[in-house]
Length: 466
Image (cartoon, rainbow, N blue to C red; front, side, top):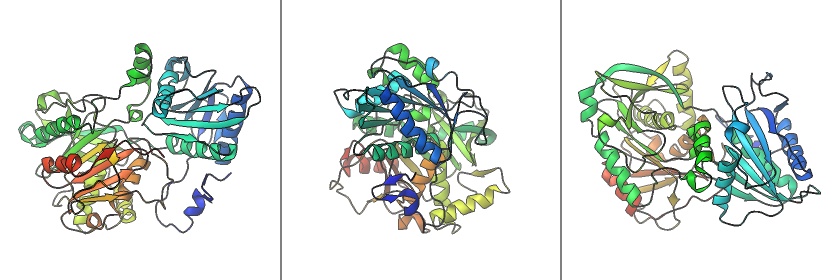
């Protein structure tokens, strides 16, 4: 089986590409809630054939070890209808830790009425899925007519055409989301890297708090993902307790203090607009280093507060600041050379500073949100550069938050900019559009100037779904 995009397979598009390219990771798959009608049996056959062609193994028990790992990475759950709620306890609790992800599959004779985003998000909340599909077809004969893809990060897509084309697309999206490598781990603390007085006095707190309020007033960000619109209060509570927060598609922001060599990053969960600028509230977390697969907090000496968990994109943000500093130091000049530098560095070191000592940052501010610029509306093109991920390296679908593949997706976009990959000051604001996901903006001037460019330098619209 070849996963196709148009008439060319993803693997064919990469034959001549050197360096990093996305590749699917084989998974252990468990059918947690089996099919109950001919259409569902047909869907399972179509999915299973494609995943097994990519090396995936279907297991009879979620704790069954295979050469791919000790437990199931994915649970499939079939539902007889769209509306009934299925709790995570019913669906996901049998998955042993490290707990994998759930894919909700509902079959219907006719697609539910309403906005496609709401139908997609409603499926995942009602059926406790990280990702899922609503399949429209004949539940007696098993004929598939079309399918709606859904990811909790917010992307959706109505898939139409031949049965083969629909499920080639579904299989690709499954492998992208479920096979991704999570980078949300707290990998340690370094205490005394800075003092509490230094951290308390940093402009990071006021800058991030003011930016949040301005972006909220402009409608660019929302305070929290409104899952209550899609399910009962008890269902939403259960879903939030089971689904990794990286699934929720939240916006976030961070800022680098070059004097402290520490990045301040917002926390996961709600409170995106009403972000407290008071350091005593612990809503901005100091990060001084990263490891290969996690972040390291810079706990101030004599720190009087307990910090909340930082954003699932903490590692990703740190990588952007680090990449810019290494460019300015003349140590890297491309996406591949940056990854090669890290490979060599981590072969002999456990962690690396977000801003290595003696280096000059290229980027000091970052905003991540789920909007994108409307075509033809950028009114200050000399100050705003739009970049996109390298299409030769990644399939044209969305990547989930808080995973290595999304991190590389973003970094490939940053290195498309000549001003980013050459030593010197970043000229203007770099604005990376992430297909189906949103955007990341980076800047090296005052934060208020950056927010002016975002809110006044262009019109923003809902993300184009891919």
